[in-house]
Image 1 (cartoon, helix red, strand yellow):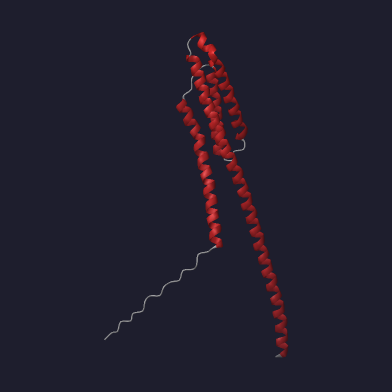
Image 2 (cartoon, rainbow, N blue to C red; image 1 turned 180 degrees about the vertical axis):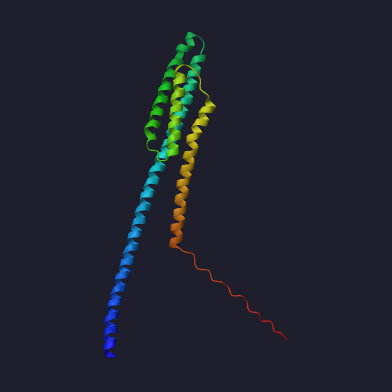
Length: 203
């Protein structure tokens, strides 16, 4: 009996050591997974922050370019409809030239920012809009007019997906924040209420 107790003590010692090693290995795996998840979350957060900054900036650049194209169209129209050499010499031609140069500056800013747009659909729509506006500016150089409603519709093909993408990023962040808050403060377990006992006395 004493021999059995001796070998049982030896076995229990080794089993305890193995259990300790196993728990340590499992804890190490959990820590590695947590670190990997944290790194992935941090990378995703940086990417979303980068995307948000450039989407907001790009949206404003596109609006500036569209506004300058409107101004350029108005300057060309005013210059063309001016009557007589005297009125044309009063500055309409110069204003037309300045409006064209202002538009070209804003369009170049849009083109420079285009490569920083991560979403393929937005970048493709923006590239199409840039080509469209450059073509319409070429028409204005020849004193032709552009269709303002058509320009507005073309600009919406960029504005709308930018707005949708920005809302999507913020919605994703909100869901992550709610999930994190729920994990820190889990809801208390619900306890089922027992059925009330029947105290009626049967006569």
